[in-house]
Image (cartoon, rainbow, N blue to C red; front, top):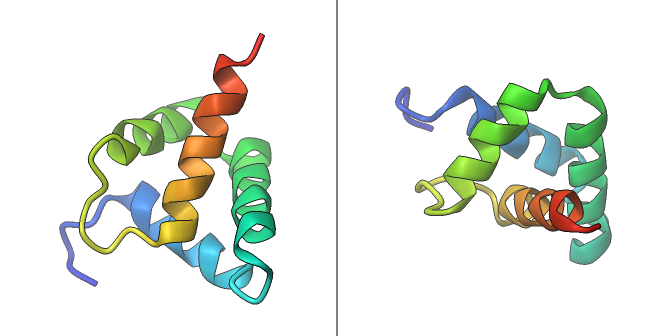
Length: 76
C-alpha cells in the first residue's frame, strides 16, 4: 500500500482483515462496531469523509463499515 494512504483507511483495512473470514454483512457490522467502540470521533469523522469518494486501496468491508456507521449516526 502506498505511503499516501490515510491512517484511517490503513487502520480500517487492518481491522477488516481480522473479520474477513466472516460472511460479508456480519464482517462489515463487526468492523463498524470495533471502529465505533475504539476510535476517536475525529477519526470516525475522517473515515466518513473518505467514504464519500473511497480512495484506491480501501477494503470493501472497511467502506461498508463506514457506511453502516454513517447510517447508524443518522438514525433517530
